[in-house]
Image (cartoon, rainbow, N blue to C red; front, side, top):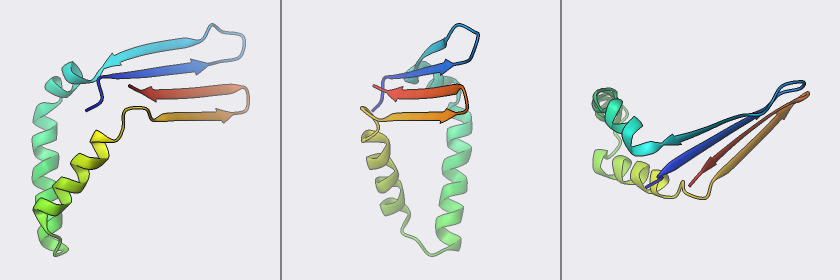
Length: 85
């Protein structure tokens, strides 16, 4: 499970903006929304005839594979980097 999310935004004529976001405290704060999202996922699986345990297992594997992911986006003079550790 990811532990830390690092966000860096490089802006022209400004200092770079860096944020270090711990995943566990944010997940605990957003837990009620996660429960609602899980219920919506169950309903969607039932509507589209998808195996619920298999869908949640696949989702868990995707979340478990996130550490080491790096997303780097550049648009014009602005650069945006997200690193999952």
